Image 1 (spheres, rainbow, N blue to C red):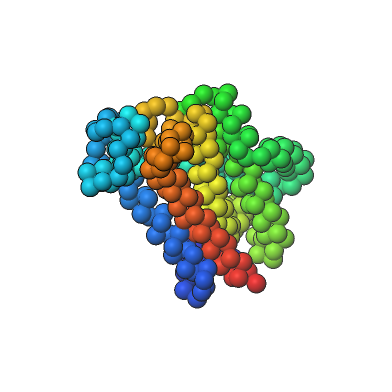
Image 2: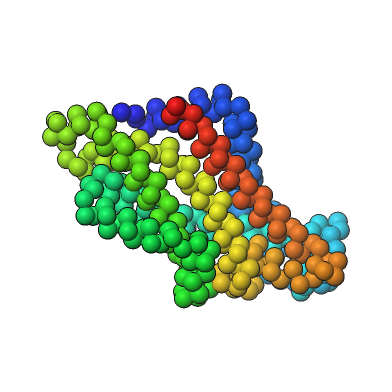
Length: 286
């Protein structure tokens, strides 16, 4: 049995000697932290109001507008800064909700087994069979645009991921000797799940979270691009990408380039973080 402190100290030791995977984690962490800081301190970083026209339309990048202006004269850099709040809010809310639902269901289903496990597995497999973006589009179209509706539609997509991964790990853990010993001394199922099994899947939750967030960023951007996420004039990278792409063939590259770069960077940051953690955890299990 591993305690919380031993799990995290083990990850720290693995990270220090993980080589390339450790550098991926570091790069991903720096990228994510930079965007997070930008979102938290947007009021101080952004030079202009992101929803107000502050200059001539379609003005190229210059010293006054470092990323230029969009089609109605709004500062692109200010919208990038405030857009980080929008995308992080949606993604964190959606992944948090999917964790709150998927993790307990995975723990209970994997440990209890029987008819409950078969029913939950069938439901989750049915949801998982749909392509994530298509399912998110369908749910978002039914719920309508809005930050909370978008977060809910993304949460439904990622609940089965947490369920399947946690359930698979629990199926292995429940046959371990320390679980048998806990049953032998009369520990209740609830105590076994919360005290003996859950601490042993925390490392897996961190990996799933990082990888899911990377995918959720791209999915949220896709929903915004299709007009199914936020509404104007809310600053959002996917929404601005859609508005800027109509001018790209005319040589006006900045309204579409900078939101696209930010989407890629943030997705790569979480992706590198998740892949690095996944490899480190795999090596620890060998």
